[in-house]
Image (cartoon, rainbow over all chains, first blue to last red; front, side, top):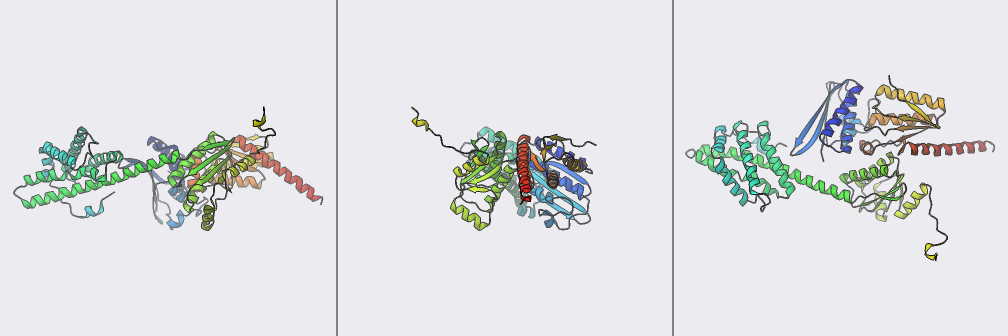
Length: 125
Length: 301
Length: 133
């Protein structure tokens, strides 16, 4: 993922996967929007990276898991980064926290100087 | 999810030739005994599952178990046991949906122990040590599978409850048209996050379908408004606003008003004590008013 | 490079966002709008997002910015046609877009602008009469 056109591609692919799993419209919108936020972050702050889309299953329940990984500068204070309004750039500062609120599961690892990895998941109701 | 405590104890590689060969050689005996025990232990829950269906489930499971064990793995979370886990999960889910109790469901796995133990005992008849070790490994294995079954069962029950809650939410959040461009949303009962989703979806769709300008949210039927409920209300109001509809909240009881003030909850929206006051305001905002007719219809000859 | 078309309707400008706005397109739109508002003396800007299936915080920021620029240039911005799923997601995201006016569709949006423009005219009349005091 390297340019802002890629953000659009990520949205389209996530949308396709969500449709394939028969998520309802609101759930689709939520996960695609979360993906858009994180993809943009990966691009703007991480200097580009990789996005992985996986279908997951747990005891009969199906879901979608998205991983956003970059080799950028990393996040020094993760808790702070998750608070709304905090931004080191031009953004509104709600990307991370927002993506978390829009997902059922959210996990983040980041090492300063090495990069960041964010995993979100949404289960079908 | 991994079963922590059991995994930490030492599971000897179940003598792969022994257990899987035994299952292979004595499949029909094991099946028969297992089915008998299952029925005794309530595994069919008084006939809710037909014998034929149960036989198929048992046979499939036994076959899958044999394959998995013969691969030599001891970890039920690993790949060789995928088919076993899958079978258990789908069996467990359907039992949960049918209303079986957790015990009735788990007994599917646990009642297999005895027939297997019998075969092991006979196979190693002259070696007490071998019997003990093999039985222990088998037991640990089946215990893990049993726990997996219970976990899936639990999650499935939760799913049933959630689905029922959604149905109740759907049924109890009608959106009513009071006048052109004016909708009323009478909320009955508590507002949790799942219900709020349904409420928002219904309300917003109604705003689109009826081109509403004003939505009156009546909370007479909401027992308490704490900070969580207030958040849900705020979300609903914000979403309606984004669609171009203003909200008026009505039916705030005196105690609710006090609670809200004490909690520092500010809905930031016009509120009226009664639905009729709210309607009057809504009419006014949409440029209308109510006028008495000079000649009441009843008097017209 | 494509630019998003801006149409003049009465005393307002209408922008219909059909595609995903990437950075350069968004900046171009802001510039174009500012230019056209001044050039036409428009009192209102209608942003039609009925074609958008997704509105993320980037788009939200853009809408806020356009509204702010418009306000400085004495034009009122109304965002119209938001889809229900988008509204629900935005609220969950934490974006209430409080600085932006909204309406169900273009027609309602135009009516909104007409009303506030009329009020604005009254204000101007009041100001003028006060000058004589």
